[in-house]
Amino acid sequence: MHIIYDFLIGLGWSATLAWWADFILFSLILLTVAWLLRVFVRFILIQVFHRIANSTKTTIDDSLIENKFPKNISRFAPYFFLSAAVGLWANGNISIENWLHALLDVYAVFVAIVTLRSLLRTLKQELQSRTQFKDKPIESYIQVVMIFLWGIGLLLTFSILSGKDLVYFFTGLGALSAVILLVFKDTILGFVASIQIAANDLVRIGDWITMESYGADGYVIEINLSTIKVQNFDNTITTVPTYKLLSSSIKNWRGMSESEGRRIKRPLYIRASSVRFLNDEELTGITQLERFKAIVQAKKEEIAAYNKALKTDTSIPVNGRNLTNIGLFRSYIETYLEQHPSINQKLTVMCRQLAPTPNGIPLEIYAFTSDKAWKNHEMISADIFDHILASASFFHITLFEFEQQANA
Image (tube, rainbow, N blue to C red):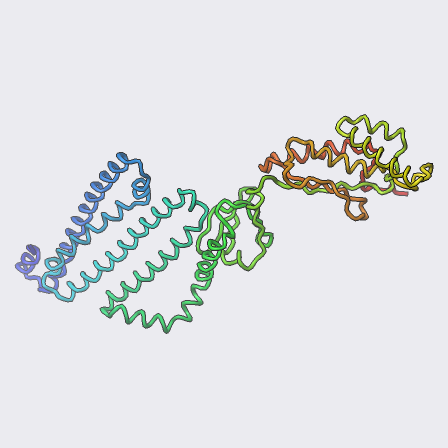
């Protein structure tokens, strides 16, 4: 098989020079044949996998093709071919034969790792396509396995190239444990955090979270070993170290998403000087409000009965009980919310008065919209406050606003 070697020796070349020339040329021939073999095997495997994928309803075979599993498997063909030809390839040189075996074994280790990576990516794809795993941090666990595989692969490579047993390198890792812990500190913290996040169900893929310290306010699109990716509402991407979710303040809006409504909690500020008792003429105008007529009448009868029982002098409004504009306005707002079709009546609905502030007396609307979509929620809130703001004048209420004093 080594005609070139014999030919060069016949031309008077030295045995060493003829051997190296023959080795280089024979290597080129073997590597070319190995490459052609790999191309052929890859073509056959891809065709077979495509046929299987087209004839089955499962998606796993499609995922295997997408993640290049057939292509990676075909890389083993050159390994088996070249391993069988090593004896002829080395042409009697034991040292070169040993090195060729070592290099081919290293090649096989990395091909095995790449093939396993394709399988792990396929597994991740299949798990994330299922509802029960869709929001779980599968990527973190896949990355941990890949780090472990690459670590084993590097140790096997050192073992093969040095000719020393694998136990020797594991013993050396014990001495370097402090350095390894320092180098992989974030990775280890991220892995532990991923387990705690999954076990305690702190954050899922698809959750809306807010982390003010990192400027993150949006939906979680990926959870991996080192970072969590958050797509903000302006479509920018914020990355947060995974382990920071356990040590930093985080607001998860999942509770709102899973509840029956989205909260409205917003105050109106009433000018204190506009708060007063209402006379009969003003009350008559308010009773014309259809949704509020019965309530006003009931309040008037209740107050009249109370004052009559105590024989109160009602000529002075401060005596006994009398209706105030802010009290009726607050009651009207609550009645309006209770009759609004977009407010969830199963949840808390109220209008409460808060402590006075320099900006006026706050009347806080506290209710939940049935529609939790952000845009729809804001539109419903705006419509409600449009109506309430416009209604204030019917109750002789003045809303607070800053007034700029004219320069003298």
